[in-house]
Length: 118
Image 1 (tube, rainbow, N blue to C red):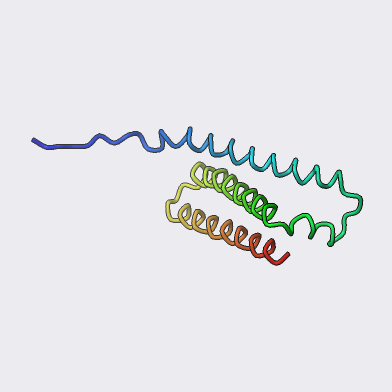
Image 2: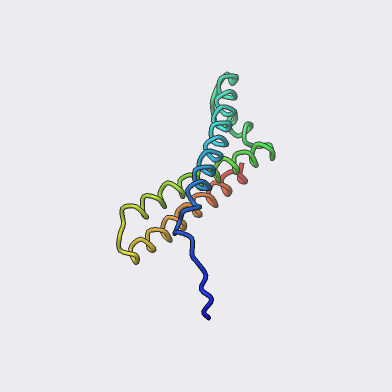
């Protein structure tokens, strides 16, 4: 008697998780945009000193990093779906996935480096 495990259809459970991740990341981005927009409306002048004073406190740096990470994750889900839907050769699709992950990771590290230099 052979024991064979039944496999679930590929990707059937990813849809809801990715949909929810897109909505949560979009909500984080929206809250950040509203927060920064509110700070812009309250500010009298916008020069480097004013921007530096907004992003200098550690809580604002952490909120900004969370927002940048949400943008990167949101972008990853969208671009990954584009690669999976429209790029058929597996090798090319893998290369595009890796390139996208590297680029988004680089952008995230760069954003952290910029924030911590303020």
